[in-house]
Image 1 (cartoon, rainbow, N blue to C red):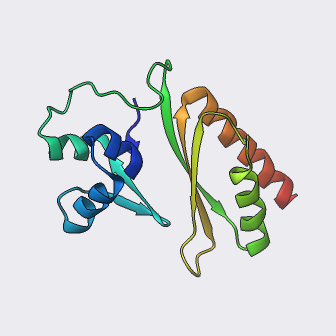
Image 2: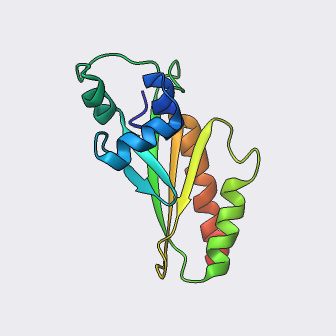
Image 3: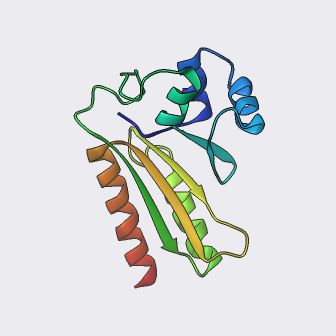
Length: 139
């Protein structure tokens, strides 16, 4: 089961519009983390909003896979061309099937943050691909 949900996934769970979820976040009714321009909502925080017990099963995208994972990679991208090359790689259509990839970089920061989530095997493949690309860039 996934640990974090997008606004759209939370909206599907709550059976409301994504705008309503964003309103809940802005009003403080629902806790969320902003990553770049997107929010991520912990499943536990969504359950707190609905009053569901913490151990209650919920259907999430990716369920049915033997294991799911979320990985955060912080990459030293001291040169903007490095960040651009990695962004192009990660956002390319067909990068790794079944992996949600989100990138962010704070203004003035050297660090590019990549968040990968999906089935554990696919996330591992995506992280390995990024690792090999970073090594090739720095070589």
